[in-house]
Length: 84
Image (cartoon, rainbow, N blue to C red; front, side):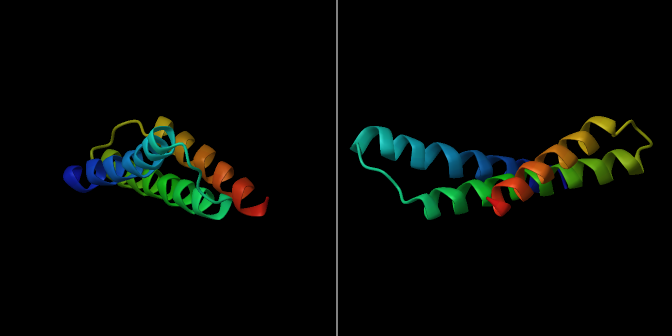
């Protein structure tokens, strides 16, 4: 599960970095819908990666409060972005 988790984090990072680099290099812009979809998917992938971390830590009886806080915080951000 460790590889899946890091794959999700990597894809989420690339979903943010590649369009940003494209906009900076070519001096064009994306539509707001495309930007919102990319950010939504990136946040969702990070939440899923944190869920995997949470399940792994729960199996090992380690503290998972930080992961739970990150999941709750990112979920709130996701809901607020979806409502607006």
